[in-house]
Length: 258
Image 1 (cartoon, helix red, strand yellow):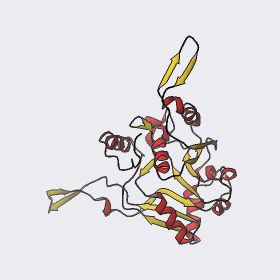
Image 2 (image 1 turned 30 degrees about the vertical axis):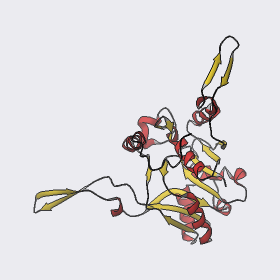
Image 3 (image 1 turned 180 degrees about the horizontal axis):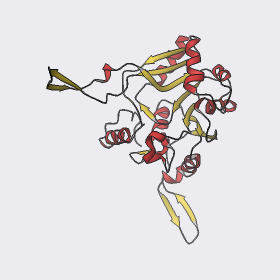
Image 4 (image 1 turned 60 degrees about the horizontal axis):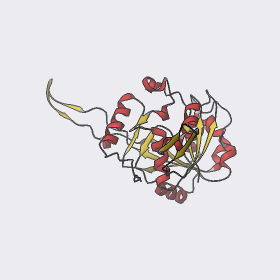
């Protein structure tokens, strides 16, 4: 089952970082967030990726073109102009890097990948969010529902605490719990190939022209995930993810280091 990752947007809400690189290449713990997303899928056995490129896509291409060397120890012989890896990186991924246009919208990017997706069920996510969601369970749920599309529903991370009053006097503060929020689109999806027939142009927006249409048709279901989920929309989000990674307690790190 192929994994489609949308990685072509401008990332304007993270402009401090994305002026020089695409958003999925912003680093957490010395690795691009895109790498974290791919490691998550590979942990569950999904190792063929179709990455939709757009804004500064060459940076993503360069990263993977040099990945084997970057992740290995090297012996450099300047006299003979040779470079020999002395350790081997451990990824066995297949990666399709597809330029889907600079200004193409999310639905249009998916539409441009039809030739690679064929007639098989596929997975879809964005290149800017991580989770500890058990993806095989989402796939199993999707198949049990018999619908064209499934997505994980998550509760948005709490950002603000509450103030407790007596009259105009503050008596204390209450931490806002994540469970106080409603459910939102967590971005990890399972889709049947028929959904591609609902996309018609580069201007199609995935969330509107595809997902809302599927919802109206009764063909869109949600797998409720109560565990960890976090997207990286702001510098604050990036700093929080970095802190979790440095602590050694990153909830999305389900894989083991080799």
